[in-house]
Length: 369
Image (cartoon, rainbow, N blue to C red):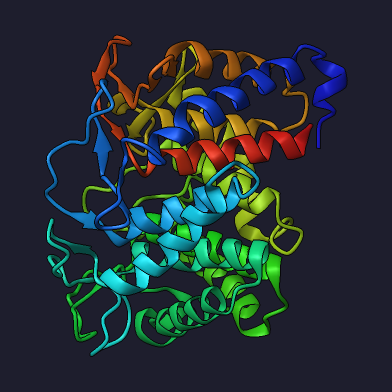
């Protein structure tokens, strides 16, 4: 790991400034205007004036991400109480008592809306419950973690170490097949579980998953992680996901040095060269490197930043990217979610799911320092 503090002495003060912005300007949004006390749920998004957008739905995934957020800030005033409330809300509003697992979303009145069983959602429930249980050792967090792991391993798993992206309410097939993004967050969830307990079943599942990703999702020409299995029609890659995968693999003693880690390490330079322009991470690229969508999203900036912190001789880039994150995406009222190809702000709402990315980024940078 590079010695960032020695190479860039001004980096700790800048990181502290960004941390303060996060703690004082962003997290409180979800304790105040972003919190629906009647439902004990975060609103899906706030407008620039901190008003909740009209409620169309609440997603279990967003609830789980906020559970992680407040678990990670457990020392911040009110965070422990908010995390406890979110865990209970997850069970009360989203759990499917008949078939098991968790519904994708509920409506404004708390009734099941999209009853699909979604791997992305279940991965975040595992991830959040593992973190929360590691902090408070609460029985309900452990039992929810165990239940989520059980349905993932028994219901979503397919042959070759992969998992279906989506299943019906009763676990029947929808023909979704495996997709990169849910599988990445499942790997993240497995890693979170292993960080708080020894679990041979989860460890085996994680190793098998990374081997399957290497076999089915890595582009042989450039080593990048594709969004759909290799050979699928209309495939592409996202630089933000390359950096996110690299961080997970590089930071794990279990996965570092494996075939998938090797692929993502070799592909880092290609993803950076093709997918980072003037410090901005582009959203989507074709496999040949041509730009498919030049939108700049704050989550991709955060993933690039924490990945850089694990790259050799990258201290200058880390400083420059942290400055870019602060200057281009953070503002007194919170953050800008997206900028377009010209750099103009193109999305003005602030989703409840984004602080998860900022929290993991800041945690990674703090660990690197």
